[in-house]
Amino acid sequence: MLPEAATAETKESAIAFATYWYEVLNYAYQTGDFGPMDAVTGPTCRMCSKVRPGIVEWNSDGRWIAGGLVAVKGAFTEFVKTAEGNYQVTTQLEQPVGFLYRADSSIEKSVPAAQVLADIMTVRFTDGRWNALDVDRLGV
Image (cartoon, rainbow, N blue to C red; front, side, top):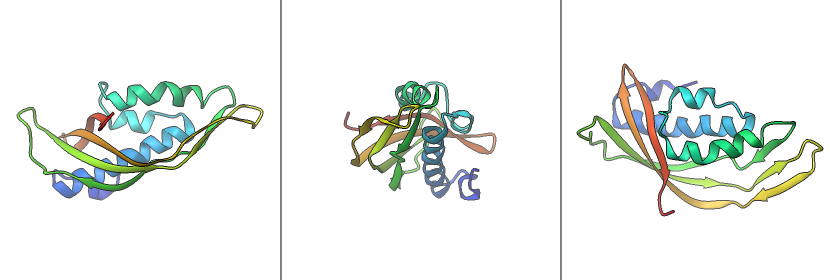
């Protein structure tokens, strides 16, 4: 559930929303259910289009993903509105090792940990709520 701290058009709220967005991404990793993420994310999100196929594949036919949940270690925004009405939030992330399990409970493969990741999120506050228009990895 979206935290109260992420419901205003303020710098602190934009950061709280960005942190929440990774919570719903983690929920998708764990369940294959993108409903909560889609509710707060625009259709042109680059990160979403990169990770969605693998998450969907590994949460079907009795398979599942364990571990690998993204932790937000820091978030920053200058909180300057662009001409389009958007803001940018940069996040520093950590992702521990993850495992992709087959339906027979054997491990298909492990996904290595990433101790330092950085994403940039473009967000917009409209109709009293935040929406992530785009999320993309920095330095890739």
